[in-house]
Image 1 (cartoon, rainbow, N blue to C red):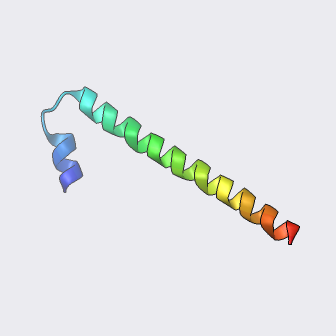
Image 2 (cartoon, one colour):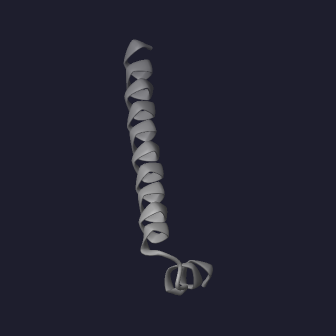
Length: 48
């Protein structure tokens, strides 16, 4: 409900765009780090 309040509140659309970009960047960062972790994990398994 807090997110709904933020998006329905009459703040400038720039704030919504900023929040959207932040969420996307966080998601991309988490995905990339997860991919790196998988790669290093599989490499470690192969080395052993």
